[in-house]
Length: 471
Image (cartoon, rainbow, N blue to C red):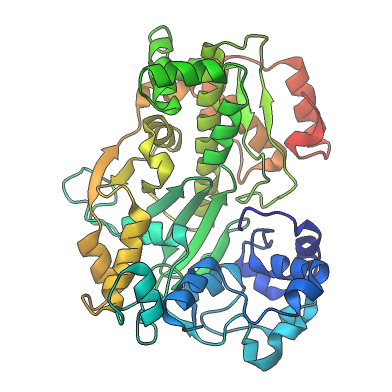
């Protein structure tokens, strides 16, 4: 399970080696990657698991094996999560250095010694046994896989955008950033040449789009964080009852409730005193610090439905600011991004989409097909069956633009940039404080509270995490 963070001790030891493979994961390996998880299994479940295991798979490779009986691994899985190099293969010295030298034996048979590009046909296709279970004919082509988020990126990033007034029209596909957001969010940007971004995974060659290097930013909890904040509020039972009475989801009801509140003041002013630091499960990118914790500042005694709706808004805004920090880090390193292509469950939430447009200042493209991860998988299947000559051709033919959401400039000045920009000024974010945002902050409110100033002072004196002081 990627969200499992048990291997904290193991990943710290791996990062202390400063091995050269770490430069391809942003300089710091994440606890969500496979090497620390494997080391944890070896050290904690040696007799019951480690010594008995014949193969260790990523989920997409496990499913491919169950469907075809072929143990070949996807290049995407191994490059993105297992330190495999598309150009050089496995690095024996890394596995020996971290205490997993037994995986080197028998030419890496337990973790993969046959590696195939996504979209390659596996073996003889669907086995008779798998075909019977699925109710399909045996022999249907099965493609070497992509990780689910990468399949979503493949399903949206190549869409034909002509006629939508987007800056990326007529520009290379490298000007696009795919954001796949559900429980967590993944930010997929590609380039013709390798770009090393501190705190952002990659560059990975041909891990998503063949012939392109991939950088992958991410936020470990987004949809899960929104659920956590909303469901933990005292007014949640009232919200549930009212949403049920209207036959709405709780988020559709909250969005409608915010529309009523916004009639009295712009959306940015609603959260001018309420701020969320969203790293409740550590920071994947761009700080790459799994020890970070979440924080809410600006709470009042009120616990009514208005208070819940505004906390929900502040959480969504915080996630969008996290995306902006990732984009800034990628652009500082050499990426040039003009348009966001968003998919996943949170793409169905209009507030989430609009806040990402407003806070990043970039248009957000939503796919015509809501389930873009399935489109990406279908692209691979179409390539494996020979319907298209290349993944790029399939992307262009099978990806369609559904809706474009543009930034709303009227709320730009009053979005809660003060908290996030002050955090960046302490060294917690990539880059320097923007003069423009500082000006906007001063126009909005000339100062921050004394307790927050004290917190910032502590950060500047060496305590650099939001968990440094209980607010």
